[in-house]
Length: 209
Image 1 (cartoon, rainbow, N blue to C red):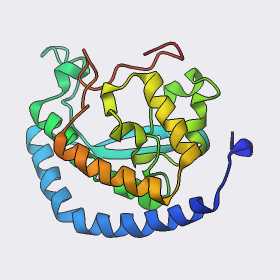
Image 2 (image 1 turned 180 degrees about the vertical axis):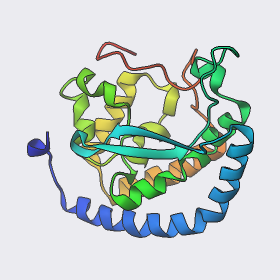
Image 3 (image 1 turned 180 degrees about the horizontal axis):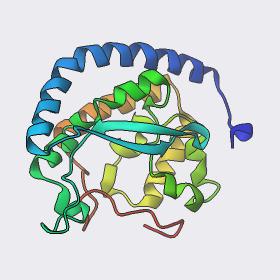
Image 4 (image 1 turned 90 degrees about the horizontal axis):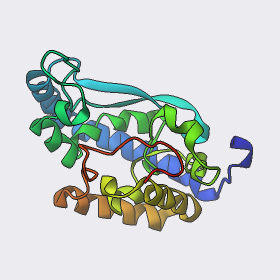
């Protein structure tokens, strides 16, 4: 995949902007992250951080870091599905995007960018069509075009279409526009869930919607 990746001059500028922006944002948000961490520990228990392997640019695997928003699986209490494990507190963290604050560390490391296709599950890698797989030509983002265009309310096909559109049209103006729209979406708290699901149903392949 890396041999076919199209690199544009903005990609180098973007990495510099990510490094500066993530450094400043991470430091400024530390007090907020401390408060959220304490709240997560009290309401959901430990660990307070959710860590999971995700594919990044060129499909390279990295460890995504976020605040935990779900209770542990507990068969005796009937906590199995995402719908059952996601609490009201977790919903607030997700709708406000406070759960994403630790991902600034991923942006600092170069695993992610502020803007780009969201990093999905590793198990999806062999389910993409060649066109859908183009989403991995750039670093995944904390926010992205699909997120400001409907978030989890979109079908998988729609999300991937927006992801590839971003890859083809990425630039400073596009990124600034997405960041501004992200702020608006966070306040509106739209598209947090997919119809019939607590978040988004799993991607089963190119025919899934």
